[in-house]
Image 1 (spheres, rainbow, N blue to C red):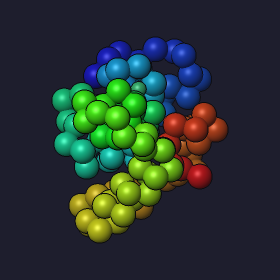
Image 2 (cartoon, rainbow, N blue to C red; image 1 turned 135 degrees about the vertical axis):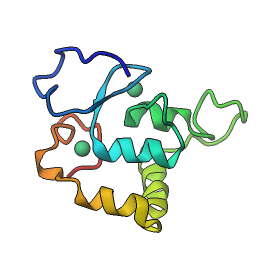
Image 3 (tube, protein in one colour; image 1 turned 45 degrees about the vertical axis):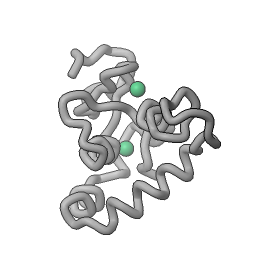
Image 4 (tube, helix red, strand yellow; image 1 turned 90 degrees about the vertical axis):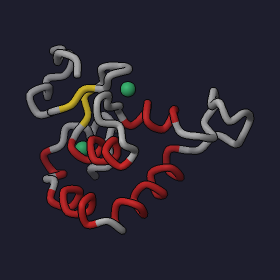
Length: 108
Ligand SMILES: [Zn+2]
Ligand SMILES: [Zn+2]
């Protein structure tokens, strides 16, 4: 985890920062990192999507790039099927999340 920078006025809210681009992200994106077994390094929504198989630049070769919407819906199916992810996902207070206006999470 990197040291938070005062780029966003909401910095105090975010517990996590992307290890690739330093974008802050909220609990829900953190849960997706756990689903993907990213523990030591964690990534924001945009970086997570760009790293998935099928995305441009993937080692799996040319494929149709996965859209954020498609990927998120797949991940949500996974999260909702497992109580260990579903419980913290649903208990997170989305109304307070500053990621909503900057489109960095699913809180909306
Ligand atoms: Zn990032
Ligand atoms: Zn959020």
